[in-house]
Image (cartoon, rainbow, N blue to C red; front, side, top):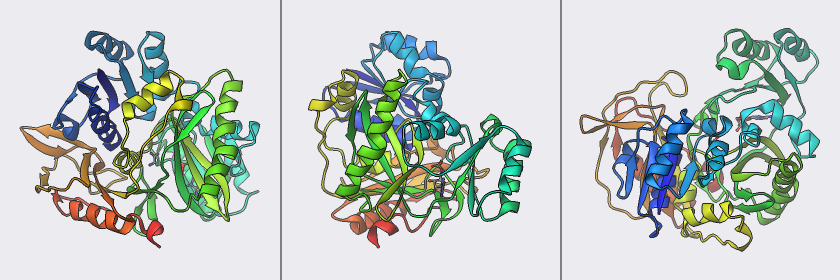
Length: 422
Ligand code: AMP
Ligand code: GLY
């Protein structure tokens, strides 16, 4: 069987790497991929323009692709899954309609209210002056969010009215997030600890994956600007069995059943970003895809086949599907380029010292091969990922791997996993 993975990040490297481990898989293509996927056995990069849906379809037909896994949100929000499915191709990912859960904060917040899913109080604005007026009526801190996709960076936590007005100005007037900021959500600030709850969904069937926790802010101790994620670990001890059930009953099932009611059943990975406090759960956001970097520590724990899992969801057979995980813990540390999450440097040559440990894996993200060398090409460049007997052991191995990677301006957070260890 041949598999196509769409995307070029650390998530896609991990998804392709895991897919290639299935013995029934003869080849995995990644479009467009990165230097890491280019160097793996059984994996090849293909320079497809993923915005041109017909070129993806033509490639699938020509190569007889039996499964397409769509990694990033943008092609899903643009409708790539619908297009491929309508052309008879086995594409694993939600429809354009369902992907609005991530693609529009206003859509998702309205959906939460309609289906009784716990979330922060909010208001949505498409006009700067109405939004500024609203700032006079609320408590602080508050949270200002660009409505559309902004690579995890379109959320600004504001301590007072002046900061909130500045945030609105940056979105509406200065277009800091382009068209994503034409509409803005202002919502109550929630306290607590975050967790990522990711499941495989087919219609009303929800098969949760192991739990994980991301580290969004760029600086140690969760200080500084929000990023796409600076590292993650699994499992996340904050999600107890009791809480797991609560999340399924109060968040996951109401969401998938709500989408069925809307006439748009969900297929694909569904990721709830949650805030947890005193055993109560509120949804911060939904993502219509796997998390990055959560995928990396989750995939390294997966023992059964990712490909069979996706095919099972496509056949609507998740009821009888079981997933095997290792009991070991995992930790993934993102190595980023100087400047990230703002303007960052690129084209830096990378040196990677040899390592020999089956419990560690270096997933590439923003890398490419140029003149036979690996050079940086993105803000998040690698995710050094490791398994360990406990989180502390996994963390130590992940940081040992970090020490083997070098490029000018490389940095990482030194505390990935700290909440799980504390
Ligand atoms: P989102 O893209 O909506 O998940 O927001 C990105 C990050 O901003 C989250 O992971 C949280 O760390 C933070 N955040 C978002 N909404 C809130 C909120 N209502 N209260 C506190 N922090 C939030
Ligand atoms: N790690 C957060 C995300 O994938 O959106």
